[in-house]
Amino acid sequence: MKDLLYSLAKTYLCVCLLLFIVACNNSKGKSYDSIDKSPEEISALYSDYLVKAVSNLDKIDISKIAKEDQKKYYKEARKYFKLLEPILAYSDKNNYKSLNAPNIIQVKGETSMDTRVMDPIGFQVIEENLDEEKIDTLTLNRAINVTSARLKLIHKNLSLSLKDHNIIWLIRDQIVRIATTGITGFDSPVLNQSLLESKYTYQTLIDIVNICQAKFSSKEIKDKFIVALESAQKDLDHDFDTFDRFNFIKDHTNNQLALLVEVQKDWKVKFPFEMALSNTMTSLFSNDALNVYYFSDHLNDTTKIVEKQQFGKELFNDVSLSKENNMACATCHVKDLAFTDGRKTFDKNQTRNTPTVTYAAYQQSFFMDARAGSLEGQVVGVVKNHNEFNMTMDSVVNRVLKNKSYKKKIADLYNNKRIGLNIRHAIASYIRTLNTFSSKFDKNIRGEESNLTEEEKLGFNVFMGKGLCASCHFPPVFNGTVPPNYNDTELEFIGTPDSKDTINPKLSSDLGRYLLYKTEEKKHFFKTPTVRNAAVTAPYMHNGVYTNLEEVVDFYNKGGGAGLGIANEYQTLPFDNLKLTQKEIDAVIAFMKTLTDEEY
View 1 (cartoon, one colour):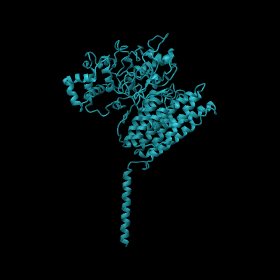
View 2: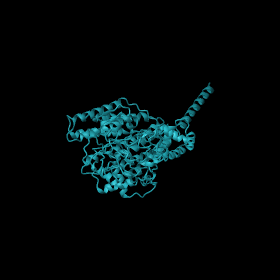
View 3: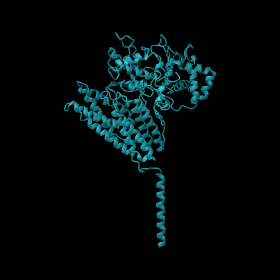
View 4: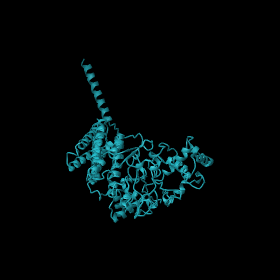
């Protein structure tokens, strides 16, 4: 009997030891608890901030409390909205966009022919109305009530599903959001507390990283990442107008992005696919920061891509694609002029200035009125335009197939019979190569060179701050496609005049977006172009009215069309006038000149 008990006890101890070894192996390298409760804890954090944002909004009773108290409760509500921003903006993009929208009329559903004109809601609407000397109580009460109700609905339906790659994406999005819109005054039009609010959002990232400590194999990497976030947070304690955004991005943003790649390696994260931001980006201003194929109709069509790009270059320069065999894409988009033509308009038949196609890949809409949804779609527009190629796509296909070399390339490069689509894809693939991020500015902010002058740095800081240029021209591309999701390319009404006459200025007669759908609220709206290579792409504006950058900056400094005295209802510039000094104006121009790629 003793022998039997001894044998059972020995077996039991062996099983326990084996289980202990297995458990140790499963948690090998983990410095923290093996039980990962991070999704639940992030949800709890999110829930707490939602409740506090709503609680403070609901205290803004215009009829019962003083104006100062109204502003106090708004600031608290806004604080918690910013604290929840990283999670809301990732998990519920549409609601975040609505709640953080500018105080301008929203037009939705044009392309589906279900046009709806909607009054804006959200924090910016409340902020601007609270600042009015005479408050429009109906508008303000509606904004408060609808905003509060929306947040309550989000809280009621709260259901976060965050895997490791989702958390990494969430963190990366917010790091980029802070650098591209958070520190620019993009969504704090009156209080001008963008830097403080960016500190709030960093705090949420710090809290999330600490919540996720069980995911780390290396405590050193976790601590290093926390220190990087806290260091940036500390440097944001600064005056808005004099804040050094250049060094903030160079020293903090780029460092955080590089460290985040270390974190995801430590977590052994496997990404199911790439979004607009590259999963391995280590710098905001590099040609691999953005996934260029995210903006393509053919996301996965990258086989033999170099050959397709070369084929597209041949087609781009081929005049046989036009009816009279006298016009190619390259006729208007001249390489030496950064793919513009140097003219006000190409000829008497054209009403709009030729834009650069450098960096054109990073958009969600094309042509100045945003009538095409992709580069491939834009090719069709050029082909069919009576004042350009004046052809049908079928006719272009026939001409391409008559060229033996082209016919062979189509067969070799594309495994389908959609010849027209393949031609368009090849041209678009070539255009997607025209984004080198090789300018003096790019090399300096990446730390590869150190020859940016103090004036040029000042120009970037004014562009990104006091000048509010970056509230429409978002870095790193400096166009109107909104980071960090890059799902929308914005159109603006800035009041461009038809001539340089400032005595009797008249609004340009081009109705822009209105001509497509006849939406009254979209008269004179045009897409926001890139300012990269602006020094070599004069003249400027949709009608080529300004011949140099000095005139362009002067126009904005005065307040756009309204500042010139052109009456209009829907101008979207977020300022009356900028009040820039001559030193600041000169600096902004100097900065824009540093955005010229080395090949131009």
